[in-house]
Image (cartoon, rainbow, N blue to C red):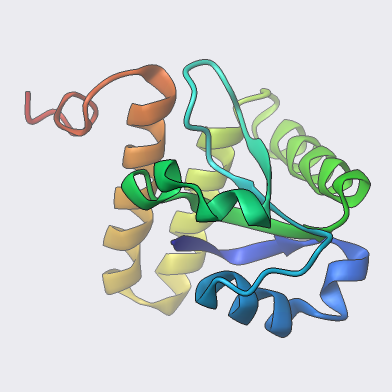
Length: 142
């Protein structure tokens, strides 16, 4: 699984953030743990997935890009709302994917150039999957 930093974390999930991340990475999920991921389906902005679903074969083939974690589905909706609100404030547009890409680039710029490539790759892959285009079409290699 890929994680976008800085990660969005719900209020209750913040108390268990490190344990939740460790559990998600190791496949030992908490009962009420949800992840907010970049979209797999065309036309979606973000998707909320219960952590247990990550054990399904689909997610072995299609690695999710996690942008947030939450404790409970209600909190997951609150996190998505927070992301959407920030996107609207920053871009004056409901383009959540564009906002997250911009945010990741800004964070990676602070950390160094190596992370910028990872941020671009994750955003391009997510953008390709969300629009139904191949990765080569999105990156301009096609």
